[in-house]
Length: 124
Image (cartoon, rainbow, N blue to C red; front, side, top):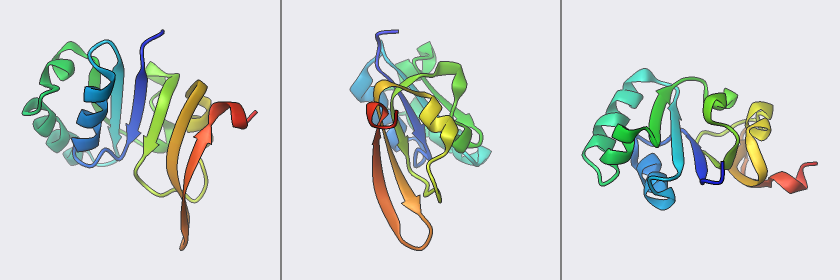
């Protein structure tokens, strides 16, 4: 669709996910993915107390437990993907779920890390 959609991996207990939801507004869609189920519960509790609680209720903001390296295909493609956890390389599923013209920000590396900005048009 024409609405902004963002995917946030490792959403830091809901804070960043809530920030993204505030940015895209209720007509957009924001998806958060946490690796640890307890963090999802904590994240949802935080979001329920925030200014974007209505977006959580109406479904334009959602938070899930899962392997963020696999993305969240259900709502793809995304205009923007923010990855908070370092990866040794950029996971292909995340590239595949990026909308044409979209952008991903991801820390990449092992001992030394680079914050990579991936623009969809520059990959193909």
